[in-house]
Image (cartoon, rainbow, N blue to C red; front, side, top):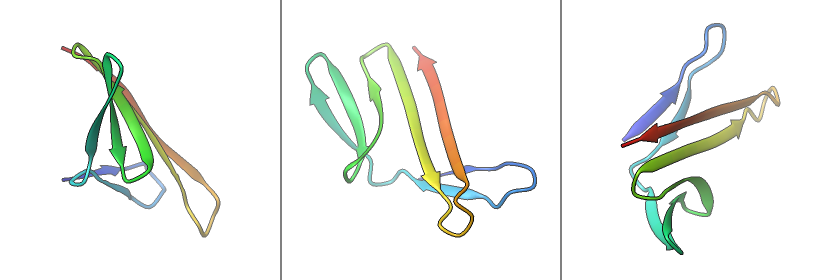
Length: 69
């Protein structure tokens, strides 16, 4: 699965999600892509927050959202 961040006037920024791993951390679960932390889930809420920096321009792109059950 691939989530793509689109912003007018900027190149698309893809975030591959097909290798997301869920790891238990106390009463919540961390969402990871390798060593990169993508967010946390606790059974009722998912908090997703990931950013990437364009290596050519140095511009930082961020994709973040909270979802409730």
